[in-house]
Amino acid sequence: MKNVWGGSVRMSFFDKVKQGATDAAKKAQQTVEITKLKTQISSKEKEIEKHYNLIGEAVYAARLAGNAAQSEAEVADLCEGITSIKEEIVQIEQKINEARNEKECVCGKVVLADTKFCSVCGHKFYEA
View 1: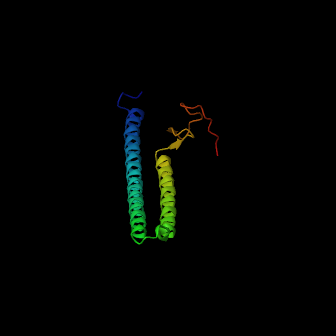
View 2 (view 1 turned 90 degrees about the vertical axis):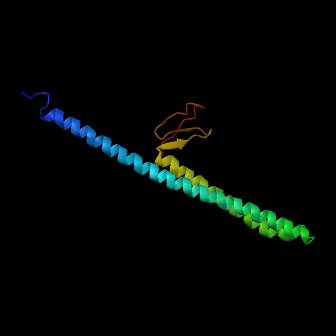
């Protein structure tokens, strides 16, 4: 006969403590990963801001020169750069959702990754 402090009860307690520590470590790792990804997004947003400033400078310089068309090629390249950076931000945001075990619905609502239907719009998620 085992007492209250016997083997299986004690092991269960220590297993729970061990599992809690493991879960805390995973959560800390997830937080570090998400923070790194958010820092990347912030950096990308600063790049976009620089592109906007360069567009303004190019347009202004062309206007001063009396030839507004002079800046078209440079502005087009900068606009393409902004589009590319915004696509990179979307990819990073997807990585954040994956790290959080989430996905985004077509309506924009973020739900848990194993959700079958969106609670806002009713969209059905199909498994890949």
